[in-house]
Image 1: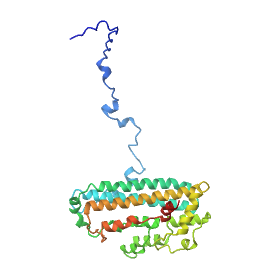
Image 2: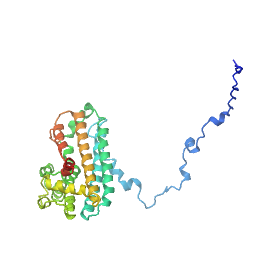
Image 3: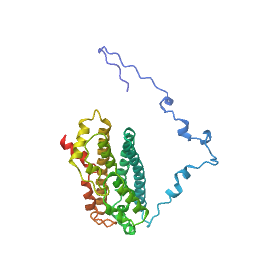
Image 4: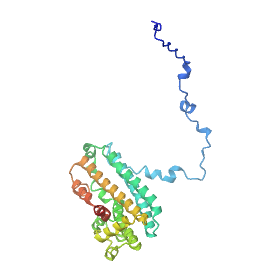
Length: 310
């Protein structure tokens, strides 16, 4: 029913809205969305000639055939891929850490900060894999766990190399690999080589900060013992940050790395607790209680200690 405008209000009636053509309301759709992309319009190298292919460069035949299941259980594929991906990320992390060590050795720290950034992103990926693995229920894992035998992440060569490179060392860990094996030899060498923190402390000494000779000349194969003098040296760096900014920045990058490593350990422990509870690990450790001990470890202890002193 049409309403007449009210009389006496002094307000003119609102003009009617213009009617738009129906076609104006229809969104324009790009042709490629509606019909797809025609690859014949691109200068694609359909014939690779003598060039290697993408799959050949990445060795995908080997990479994608490395998931050999021991059971018919659906979730075993998840379990294998999560650990294989973790090993790949650890390989990149080791590559970047050795690059950092080379920068520290030649006292050229600026390039190392980009490497530290990349290490941080790798650590984020390593942390994220626990979220994926935690989608596995206890029943899922129990359906194929016995087939693993004594295979365990405790035997991961690359994880142990990471810990040795970062300074967390104990010679007994080497013995999980047979004497004379490639893994045993690699770990023995890493145990005798200076860790990242050893090289950093040597650089501090070269820059004039008071790192004791006993710390610099210690037995590298033994666990590192925190030193009050080293804490004092780092305090000097923090109080002198304007002049030695690169050392100050290096210290903060080390703390970031250590912090993320602790988060990784914690998430590892909680994922194991969620999936197997307090059962022993397949590698013979006590499982969750063993992993909980590592939560108290500090890779660079004096950098945490100095925060209380500032």
